[in-house]
Amino acid sequence: HQRVAQCQQGQYPKTICKMRSGWAVLGDVQFLEGYSLLLPDPVVPNLNDMAPSHQKQFLEDMVHLGDAVLSVSKAVRINYEMLGNLEPALHAHVFPRFDSEPDALRSKPVWFYDWDAAPAFDADKHQPIMQSIHAYLQQHGFSD
Image 1: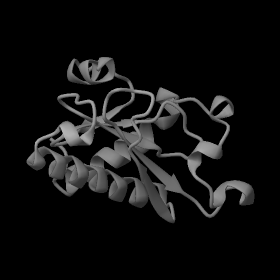
Image 2 (image 1 turned 180 degrees about the vertical axis):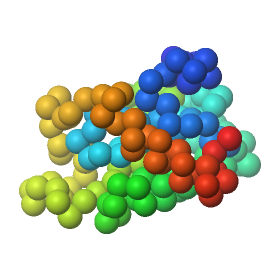
Image 3 (image 1 turned 90 degrees about the vertical axis):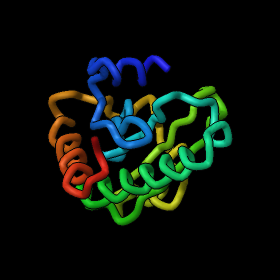
Image 4 (image 1 turned 135 degrees about the vertical axis):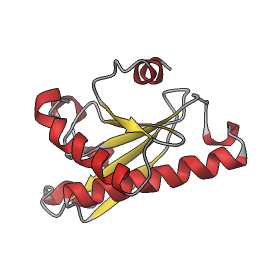
């Protein structure tokens, strides 16, 4: 809830852009550069609490965000996840996956990575990829 409120106020530094269903933001850690999330606005506990039309828009936006991350990051595929086990607010993870990942992790879920040792978001370092993702979404008509 707090992140969405900060996005609405233009105060969340990881904000990529506003999409039709919510906010595209860069992940707190960047062990896979371009890792992003889609946060619905308004916030809901889970996908099943949305009206069907909002569900469809959220899922479409998630795929559009994935297309942008795939294009910009030059990843080989995108993994999508919506878990909601720890945070009582819907959010979709968009993970780029790369051939350059360590062999022991390349075919495993991203949760096998050491998140505590992952490179943290850095506004200066990650601004170019955020701008590129936003430009892709804007060029294709998927951002407001």
